[in-house]
Amino acid sequence: MPPPPAPPDLLTATNISKRFGITQALADVSVGFRAGEVHALMGENGAGKSTLGKVISGLHRQDHGVVTITGHTLRPGSIDDAFAHGVRIVHQELAQCPNLSVAENLCLHDLPRTRLGLIDDRAARERAARLLARLEPGIDVAAPLGRLSPGHRQIVQIAAALDGREGANKARVIVFDEPTSSLSIAEVDRLLRIIRALAETDGITCIYVSHRMAEIFAVCDRVTVLRDGRFVATSDIRSASGGPTIDESGLVEQMIGRKVAPAVRRAAPPADAAASQPLLEVRNLASPGKLRSVTLSIRAGEVLGVGGLVGAGRSELLDAIFGLDPAARGTVIACGRELCAPGAGARRGGHSGPRAAIATGMGYVPEDRKLQGLFFQLGVGENIVEPFMPRLARLLGVRNIPAELRLIDERIRSFQVKTAHRAALPGSLSGGNQQKLLIARWMGPSTRILMLDEPTRGIDVGTKAEVYRLVREAADRGVAVLLVSSEMPELLALSDRIIVLSEGRLTGELREHADMTQEKILRLATAA
Image (cartoon, rainbow, N blue to C red):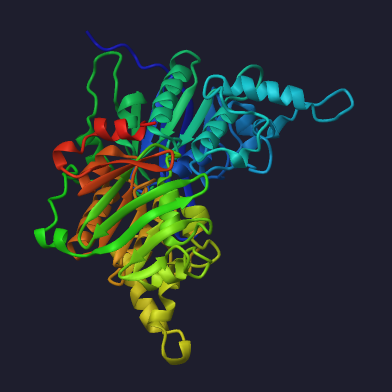
């Protein structure tokens, strides 16, 4: 008996092409999206996933092709037309006004007014509370958005996409561009359930862009793969008719054109590494409202993982070690040099600062590449060499341009950063290539202590495997690695030891591989 015919598409993108300068982001891509389905867009960094989502939602104007929804052709590059016909987008990077309240952020596009034309704050708060009720009802809608955690700010952005669900402008298509990148495990699970409910109960078409395989197979019905801006295939993940579906290995092969070996746990460091002096020592490091007397040490050739939930103090710990938290107090010794000690240092008992940390051979890849990591007004090349210009300089501090260019070209080539040229601004790169640029800056021969905060956030599966290899190679060269990751398989695969934080304090340490399990990490992460 033949399978039942597929339902018609609600939204279609036909022969979409888009070029940015000399970069062809999309080339003649055609995809159809059905009503009430969760449809994944996948591919390597720079494959065109986010660009296609932005064309569909009117943020980008395509060079060729059309986007239609229920027979209406959307005006190219028109956010207003897309919104009026029910198309929304939830961005990977937070696009909000942190100085305004949660309610004001949720009502920015249509602020309620009183009869006198003034903003109706009460109505705005009521609408915001109604939108957040399905996501996180505990969020204070009157609070300034900037005071919320990154996870809660992402939830507010998702709630904004649901506004107008009733009436002429109700949401019919929502593009989710890496929506879980800042969320905790519990928040991710809740969001995935909400997305399924939006599709199954409300009939909303959810276009889901993510690099996290587990999420794709947990929530999506179909998946479309792009490679180098071109359509590769659309496949079923879950089939109502019982037809053939694609598995993870098949999906990876479609994405990168080759098979990738699964991540395996790193072999134990050599015995002499355990007997060596620590390259990084941290004792009783504390910061008001962030950290409570954290102590740790890392030896050469060792990878120390840091587990915990969002808000546990993991990023705050790395900031304090690197010298970005002026309120931090305690002891930090890097490569034998005292950067922070009680009653000493450049800041009356505080840290000597990031410049001193870099001088010891410390490198830091922060979680937020946009606010902390990259210089968006400088070119790709200058972003790579900026911390090392004094080391490369000639006498009297004159820049050594040939040496800089050799380093830039070597890093771009080694890390496969897709950029038009060295002078291109980071904003012209995809999110994944921005992350690779940041990693390329610090994974060099001069780095002896490497701190990585969510290093594979926004990176495709092929590049993720490459980052794993580079982290292991760095440790094998004798680099001490401090790794923060919300992805449990990643943390378990790369770490020799794992410490776990909860509410700013260290709740436990797992030393033996047999003890390093997801269950034990979660138990320590939720300890009171």
